[in-house]
Length: 151
Length: 121
Image: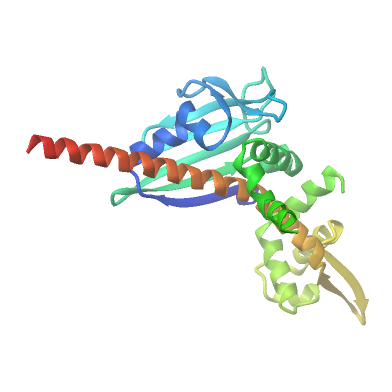
């Protein structure tokens, strides 16, 4: 269903093996998204990712690896309720596809599940995840803060 | 606005035919007949799609002569587009970070490999 997804494609000047490691390993995931990541990289392994609130507490989201075929494909589901098995309808599915191109990689990302889960819930999950992780929270506020300081 | 309306707004603009209809309405088409002439669907299907768009406030209808004329509510359209891009923006910055991290790792590896080669020579 094309209308229930977000799709992006980006060219990266790094080998697919390197990019695969960055998008799939819990250690690297923490560098570009959550503050905490605890999951096994094998398909079906249940885990969780955490976003630190301003008061220091951690908001956990369930996270399950769906498919891992290094260095070509990595997919996972997130935001299903704790104790539930991740499946269509109760979670968002994120798929990373890696295509070698010269010495680099074309990385394709698709996130689906908005229709099943509801758009409002998707925006809330994304905004929460974005806002509590440092830069995304801070950057949009910079111009306003600078304007205030200049007054 | 309620969560229900947000979800309906999202699925209203999510359909490719309805997105095409919005484009045509913005370009000057105004009636169901006019839209049907430019789309690969029947006039009945067009009417159904218009009803969906009308329900979420993306188009407004007014009766003029024999046919109803439709216009796009640009404020509501802007709102739908903003919602659509909210999740996309979050992914854009994540992918940007992925790119930076991977390229830094690659550069470090390349440097190390060059050094090893130089030492071997």
